[in-house]
Image 1: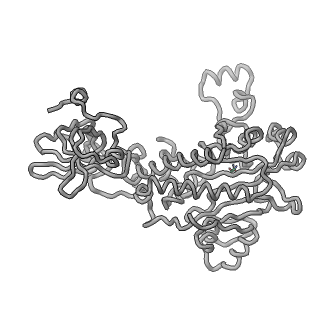
Image 2: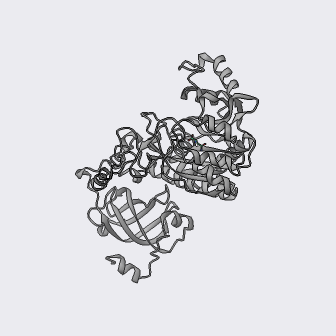
Length: 466
Ligand SMILES: NC(=O)C[C@H](N)C(=O)O
């Protein structure tokens, strides 16, 4: 009988960290001696033997372990962590099974001490959200995390294949890119530093960096600087918005994928990149993680019929007409001065066959200062929103204002963006780009309703303790 890992290694078990359950099930090498480590998902005790389902996070699948009752250590139960040594066999039903020779209990999991998940019980995402520290070990949430990880990889692969360079935009910044006043301000916390700043007569707000500093709401402006030199660039990282919203689609900290391309004269070029990005990454995730999409999904079956359809394109004016002609089909009254409410966005996409829909040519007063005006209609900008089922707006983008004079006029006062204007003064080129909310994308493909359930540790008003 082997008592610990050292003995096992001596016995030449295939103790290899790549030997996770995903690889074991894929290779299916019956007769091989292996070591598996993970968490007990369920247990069935028979008179002589015990069946244990173990999962190690590498896949949604579980490996069944078969072990005689008399060598199962006391304390192994649902939720506990174990190390198992044994030989891979086919069960009488033909499924791969590990015939265990030894189990080590690594960490016990005593329900009566307050573990919030009982064996064999299904929990709602809302219940699970109360225990963020334990969420990654639940079936639904771990599947979502694998989808998220696959999406992350697919995004980098897509941009690499398209010749885009990955550039890290700063998190600390002095600009409020969107001009919406939704920034979080950053000031030092250390009493020592504050004392020395006061001594030097510096203000707490601006003294540390000689300017106010905020957590970035968007990497776009810095990405534009990188674009004027590297051509095609993207950034993918956390962004922060101090919106007082607890909606199912807003977070205070979220991941955003942003891309910028130089020498681009036409919004069609941007739409083309977005459409092929969405189709390519979604197909990639389906190829590798379809089962995880199904496990994490809240809707009975996520619908991917849009993958082989051309995305719709409407002008803002056409979208308004559709809304005005269909007033009885949605509840929230539509007013052109307020823009589209979430319900209007979702109605528009469903009205158009639930195919992702670009809305282009927006009124200037509804969009930020950096968007390019049409030369023959200065009341409209060459902007786009991409609306998708379940989520509404998923992507926002535009051609960027490349006229130095126009941009200078439009930059809000007191923003200290001379460096951004300089991009148009010295070797400026026409550029365009877009940003996609990563969590909203995960909601779109999994059908998960609440954005707090598609990020490992969600932050929203009054919630940042874990
Ligand atoms: N990069 C982008 O176009 C995204 C845009 N700055 C936004 O945050 O909505």
